[in-house]
Amino acid sequence: MADACIILSEFGGKGIDVNMGCPNHDIVKKGQGAWLLTDIGKSREIIRACRKATNGLLSVKMRTGYEKNNETYFIDFVRMLQDEGTDFITIHPRPARLGFRRTADWRLVALAKRRITIPVVGNGDIDSPENAIKQMNDSGCDGIMIGREAVKSPWIFRLTADLMSGTESQLAVDVHDIFIRTLEFIRTSLPPHLHKSRGHRFSTYFSKNARYGHDLFTRIRRESSIPAMQDAVEQYYLRNKEEAKKKYIIANGRVFEERIPFNSHAGDLEPAGAVR
Image (cartoon, rainbow, N blue to C red; front, side):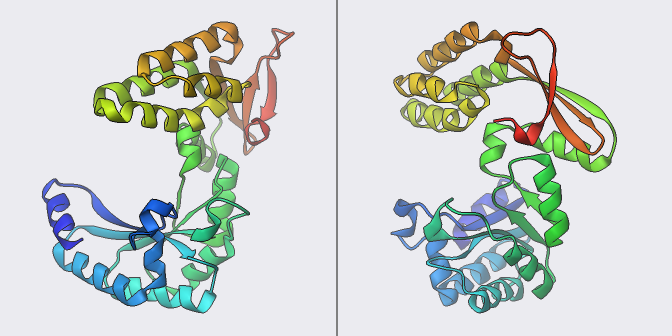
C-alpha cells in the first residue's frame, strides 16, 4: 500500500483514497475493502505506512461496520484514522454485509462528525438534489459523496449546486447522446476484454433514465460489443423519441423535471425526485 502511494503520488494525483468500504465478496475474501474494518490494528498499520509515503491528501472511504454496526467500535476506528493522519473520511453508514439493502443510517455520519475534528463526508442513498442537501444539513457533514446516482444521473451535481445557490435555473440534458458517448468512451479508453463487462455495468444504471429501462437493459445485456450496445440504445430512442431529452427547472427551492406525456404535447412539471 505504501509503494502504491509513492507511485500514485508521482503521477500527480490530487490525493489517495484508501477503500475500506467495498463489500464485494471477491475483495473481502482477500482481506481487502470492507474486511479491513474487522482488524483495527492492521488498518492502523496500513494508514500509518501510507501517511509516511505521501505528502498529499490521504483519505479513507469506509462502511460503519462489517457484520453489523457497533457504535463504540466505529468511533474508535474513525478516531484511529484521524490520529494516524488521515485528512478526511467518507462514511457509508451501512454494515458491509448489508450491501445496499435497507436504508443508510445517517445518524452514524452525524455521530462521527461530533466525535472527530477532521472533515467527514457522508455517502449512501443520495438520489436527488433535495436529499443531498437535507442529509448534509441534518448530519452536519462537510460534504456529500454520490455513488450509484452519479452513474445514473451525472447531472445531479449541477442540479444540487444550483439548488444550494438558491437561484432559479434550467438544465437541458440529452440522455440519448450521453448514453451513446459514454459507451464510446468505454470502447476507446478501455482494453477490448473489458468492453462487455463495463458496458453492461454502466448500462445497468443509466438505463434507469428510460421509461422502459428494464426492456432497454435486457436488450443491451444480450450484446457483447460496444457497437451492438449502441445500436440497442439507438433503436430504443427511435421508438421513444420523447424520452431522449430531459429538462430540469429549479424554482422555489425545488427541482422539477419537465415531462412530455405520451398523449400530449404540453409539458408537465413534476418534482424531479418523484420521477423514476
